[in-house]
Length: 380
Ligand code: ADP
Ligand code: MG
Image (cartoon, rainbow, N blue to C red):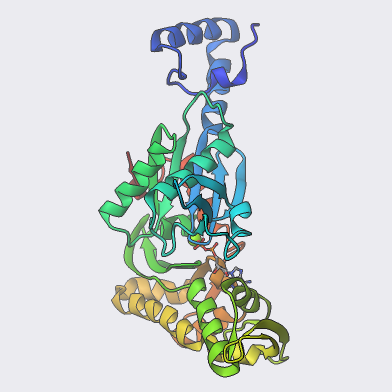
C-alpha cells in the first residue's frame, strides 16, 4: 500500500497545482491499490472534513467542521490599521482592543446589525476562520455554509456569498438563520406542523414560524443584546450621572440583569465616570434597576413575536400553543426573559439547550445533510 499525505486525498476536485488529468490518474492508482470502496471512504472522510459551517453573528462567530463539530468560537471583532486598512487582529485578540486602541488602529464589529456593514473586513474575518480551520497552506478549497438572517435582501445575500468565495471557499452556501437555529434546537422542521423559533443575539432578533422545512411567517428587528447594553448605560447616565463603556454595560446585564423582578435582589458595584464632575465614581446597582432599564427594549423585542403570532395561520398557531416557542441566541439567556415572554405572549416559551450554539450546530447539520435540507439552502 502506498503512502500519500492525507491532504492529497481530500476532495474530488483536483488540488491546486495539479491538473484534473494528473489528479484523475492518482485517484485511479490509489483505487487500484486501496480498493475502490476504501478509497471512497477515505475521500468521503476528507471531503467531509473540509466542509465548514459558519455562524457569522453580530457578537460571536462560531465555526463548525463537518465530522468534528464546533472548532472555533470567537467574538466578531476585527482590528484594522487606519492608514492602509490592513487587518491586525481578529476575534479574541481584537476584542480586548475595543475601546483601547491608539489613533492608528481601529477595532470594529463588522456585522453591527446582523448584515455586512464592512465588506472588506467581513471577508478578512471569513478568510481568518477558513485559514484557522484548514491551515494556512490548504491545498483543497473547502465548501462553506454561512447562515444569514431571514430578513436580508438579495443584495446582502450576494455580498455574503461573494465574501465567502473571495475568502477561499470553492463553493458557498447560505441558510436562513431561523431554520439553522431550529435545526440546532432539535426541532423537527420537516414535519407538517407549526414550530416557532425565536433567536436573539447581539444585533438582531428574529422570530419565525416554520412548517414543512420552510419559513411560513417571519419578522426581525435590529434590536437585541447590544440595545439592552445601551439601555443600561443610558439608565446609569440618567439616574446616577454615571458614564460607563459598552463592555461594562454588558457585564452588568449578564451578572445581575433580569427581565422581571427577582425574589432575592442582587447588587453589583459599578465603576465609571461622573458625567458632571468628570471624575471616577462607583455606585451599587440593583437588579431591580436593570429590570427597569431593560423594560422598553424587551417590550420592543417581544413585539415582534406578537406580530408573527398575529400573522400566523390558525392551524399553526394551535400547534405553537401546544409546543411553545423555542428561544435561541445569547439574549435568551437573560434571566427570566422566558418568564416575561410567556407572560406577555400567553404561549409557553422555553430556552433551547445551549442557546448560543443552536445556529452553528444547525448550520453544521444542514451542511452534513445538504440533500435533506436542499430547499432551505441557497448556493453559489
Ligand atoms: P450573535 O448571534 O448576534 O453573535 P449571540 O447569540 O452570540 O449573538 O449572543 C450574544 C449576545 O448575548 C450578546 O449581546 C451578549 O451580551 C448576550 N448574552 C450572552 N450571555 C448572556 C446572559 N447570560 N444574559 C444576558 N445576555 C447574554
Ligand atoms: Mg446569532
